[in-house]
Image 1 (cartoon, rainbow, N blue to C red):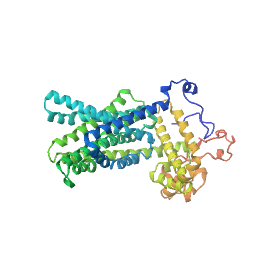
Image 2: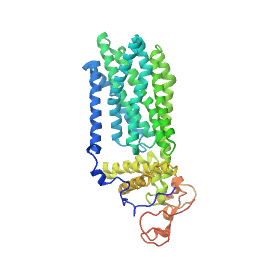
Image 3: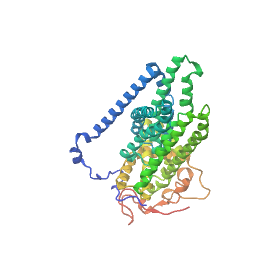
Image 4: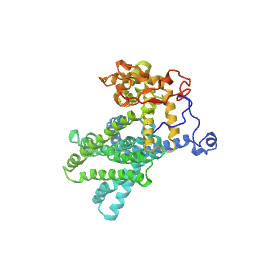
Length: 478
């Protein structure tokens, strides 16, 4: 697939406005359609729901129990959020999506779940006149359906309204996992606070107390339980994001299938509490641990696949002159990215490191966009999005390129034993080996047309542009 035409007149020149949305339409937009109004309304809604759910939890646990539960429930949150952020390092999404997801899970989703679960349990108890069976049925049937549905709503909202930030399976995993982390945080406050209140009544203390047992089960052994369930929903939405261009029923069934799997695993987890003294440990060992291991392998494999996509797609922009030959290798390796960030921070401070990180994120998005385009799934805004990403890369090139070139030199594999020629036909580039040959996969992309590079800015060759990037490359294979 060729890089989209027309180019901007030269690298770094922004293309003109694309699409029908212009200044006139913004000026005539109604006040409720303005972004700050929508964002303010969403923030107010999430804040209000958070205050309401915290008030309900404090009412059930008491002030002292609420504070104890809050202090204990917050412990796994930084670790879980950091783990999901680590998975998202190849193409990190904006923090605002993570903040929204956590706030939705901890506030809106928890509030809707506690209200719906309480109402359904009371209705079942009224119909059956058996409160114990109502609690069991509510935990096994009602709670998984309600809780996974309200958590899935956050993933759906990001999928619909932040579509540019939701393009891979890992995007779904991260949004779903952070949403579930917020939900589990609020739920743990309730359970731990209630356990503390029980200890106050019966005089329990030490490791044998109800609070210690609840902390061990919910925080130590299974902090990943809720994220594990909801991640299945996120995988379904991520698969739907990759299925752009396919029939609509297929794209609808993928998230639905993930949601049903999440509900089923959640129900199985809740069943373990009714299977006697060892039921929890049996379900934990037989299902939860293998499922956690399998999903961990899946998301790590997906991350490696995304890095491979970066290495395979970006050389097209090397041939066109937008990137240097070393950059696809450096951007396709997390080790090289870390080296580049350290180099930038050491030579230019935090601002330089931030520019390199942003350069990597935009380049990764560009690689994913081209990958979808080659498969016919890029959408109608492919050209506009490609130009936008190229413009962002060009703005940061002066800071990012030295850092990435250094990272490529440091982390490149050893030179091959046969002689090869690097960029512009110069042997021994980058420390005694070929610029292309050092990076294996890129040796097939060859040498830039010397007739063009010999006279930059002039039409010395019929195939040379007067200015800007040179898309013409002689095929070369060592």
